[in-house]
Image 1 (cartoon, rainbow, N blue to C red):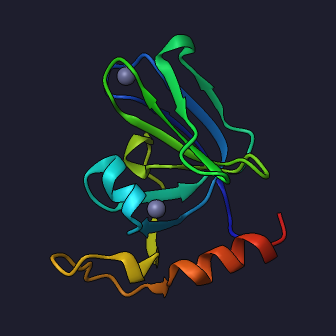
Image 2: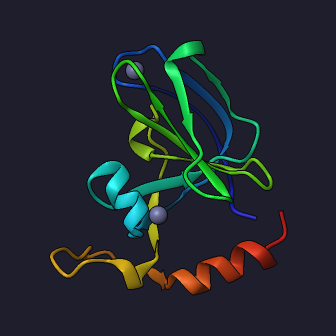
Length: 142
Ligand SMILES: [Zn+2]
Ligand SMILES: [Zn+2]
């Protein structure tokens, strides 16, 4: 189990706030076509456990993007808030939302087989294909 940290975050307009106690230090990029459509580019995300407190009432819009996950955004400013796995409620936050940036390490990329050819990260990372990711979701212990 990786070390986790307590972090606060907020959206661009401040209507939505996030308090998370289990923010990991490992940042991943997802290159799948859904993430790239959602954000206009690859999604950077850090795992935040399942107990983050996200407040913002009606400004939080949750979109069920697939059978296994949902995505949320601030309906006032458009900031992407989180990606959440339906099965266990685990949240993944864009690290750019978090204050007090911990010692984050960009160390993995997923759906590398869906990455378009026009960009490439220079970081040395562990890269997984979409099929490898789906296998790890189903086999992983929570
Ligand atoms: Zn906002
Ligand atoms: Zn994705």
